[in-house]
Length: 113
Length: 110
Image 1 (cartoon, rainbow over the protein chains, first blue to last red):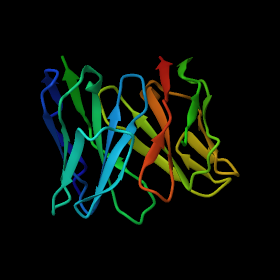
Image 2: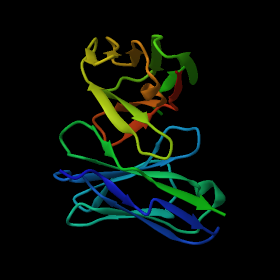
Image 3: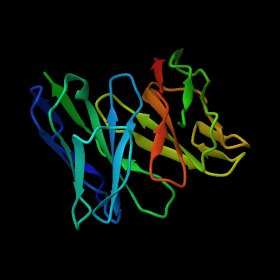
């Protein structure tokens, strides 16, 4: 059984650029959630994808968008990057129906300069 | 807005000591999860509690869910340096997201 994997592990972008982060969910899991974790804070929910559709969204602007593919993998896209977008981006997979127990990947550290 | 408050925010203890960290909310959660996170890594799930008053043990770690399902505690007996990390509680509901606290940063000194 493979766990949740994310790529890349580290990324440096310039303010105003766009970025795509990728996530492969744990084997057998059909739901993917994305979280943003700023330094010294707990993870904040961005959105969740189930059956290739957005299934809930946190308090993030529309320039944060995502996709889920038929194999349940997912992408997080952020347009018009701002300095405050610098954070650890976490992907979590779960199996819908099993409460909200989630298993996290190692994260992508995004630095916006 | 559901919020989870964790205390203490920082804890530095000597190897062999016992400790308790707390997770409190004014909201009811259908489940509560505890994670441990190491620097630069994703959170690792330690336990899920779902029933008010539930107690779960994981080796030297004891987790308790409050009767009203609004609070939880994590007790570590005879802490070891390998227990060092950020401990996060997260509340889950019938909806889709987890609400996290800010975490307790634990340092166990040898």
